[in-house]
Length: 253
Image 1 (cartoon, rainbow, N blue to C red):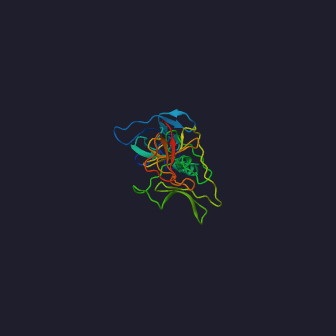
Image 2: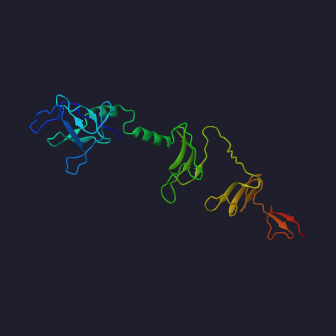
Image 3: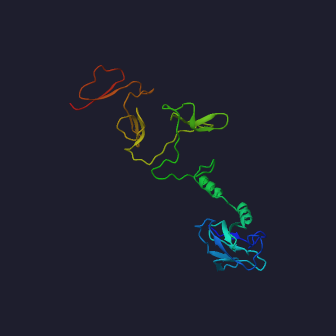
């Protein structure tokens, strides 16, 4: 808080009940007009000197003084009863407040919000360990295949986008660019894993896996122009009901 200035104006005079001035009169300062009010003695004159009571000047006017810390109005008694005296520096305080760089602290508050926001361009985000820096809530249990949480466009066509359903479309702008995926993994680790349920890095239950060394593991039939519907068997006995294109590697007599 701060000390307010009282007195020193044309309407702050020490007077009798009939309005007569009281030159050099001594007065007291109170917290309220109630009988159980507290006398305020923590007063300071304009030169910084402490005082406990007021003294009117030779004309009966009350010189300016600083009231107790935090009091914006007090009650003064020069013998005719207690009368409220309001701070005389209110106008100056208002002017200082209005002309201040951040009078209500809202600019500092807004700056704090902007510091935590993501700018449209040139932004740099540091994600806290164990926390997601962005979470998007999509509509419905099955998502929304027409809406996107991310969409790349040149203004006329739509390219790479992440649909609200979780589906990812990779379309380059302009000429074709090969898909390139990199990761710091070993040859034995899974590089790409496809599952029938929710995505997981665990290899168990995967229906299609690409290892770090390029090995491809498939839980189903692999069909290609140079492979066809070929099946590969191994063991001591040939496969039952073989088909054209089947491969049997005999071992373990």
